[in-house]
Image (cartoon, rainbow, N blue to C red):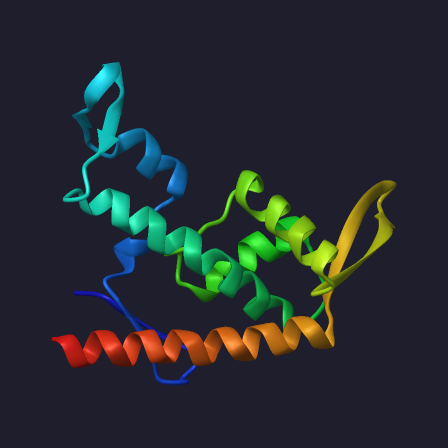
Length: 151
């Protein structure tokens, strides 16, 4: 079983497979027949739960890497992938909606810069964003402690 120790803060994420891409989960998870011609999700399928957990933690990891320094979207995605040792690799379809949500909520600020004639948005974590990350760490630690007590 693989382990990932997040920033030496006592947060251990066991079994790094839980960070499979959500899109893959929705496309690959087993479906079971449902009424009226619809299919229902198979809640016994690990791929489904892996995707749900990964999607839930994407925001956490985006806030985490933005604590380091201001970054543009592609750089954020690569830093998340690197800091999670490849377990969480957000796509453009995942990262930009989250960044827009963070901007609208005041968790990040955005400024435009031009590099080699190309414009890009650079995201900076605000004090409110740092506070949100601290709350997320506390919440995650409570969840991990609860899970550990159940085993």
